[in-house]
Length: 241
Image 1 (cartoon, rainbow, N blue to C red):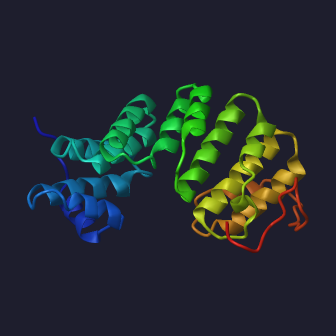
Image 2: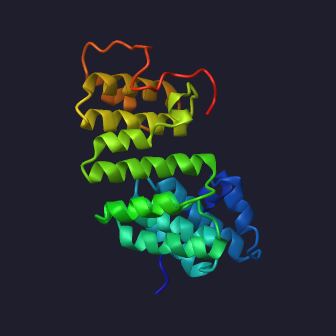
């Protein structure tokens, strides 16, 4: 029996054009009948991912049923499985997407699935073998590698993994906020609370889109003052990464 979906909701999310342009461009390879169907289900999955990951997964599965050979569909399903905490299935779909597309932008998420499955050493192996990643994907891979070091009880090594030009930049972006937040976490796990507080502050300043809870973490520490002096050889830089 075919799955039942809310047709009105699917029409709404399709009309809203919530998907990134590169995703829509890849879906344009489908014919006029299948294209809108897949786009509507991927749009629903995109909208529901945070609020209802199980329902997002249901839509992503339907998109795969319709277009199983499209890399973006398999990647979307992998992401949906990841958000539903089904990491083995997520890894399988993300690897399928990588085989189809030849792109490596899903490698950080594949490595993070290994972490979630209790294999931090495998996550580090993926990170070490990854070459030629674009700058944003490199940042994500460093964050995952740092998390793997944390899993292995190596917080100082986790902090070192994150010491890049972007970490010292004043750039306001999701990537900048995420790497500063991860650095703060590693410092905190190393017992360097004062430094961690400073970096939670820097993460909050970079986090215009609130992709982290840095501001909330900062609020947990009372009497915090923002400092501008160099910490651990990583002074803030006015230039871009």
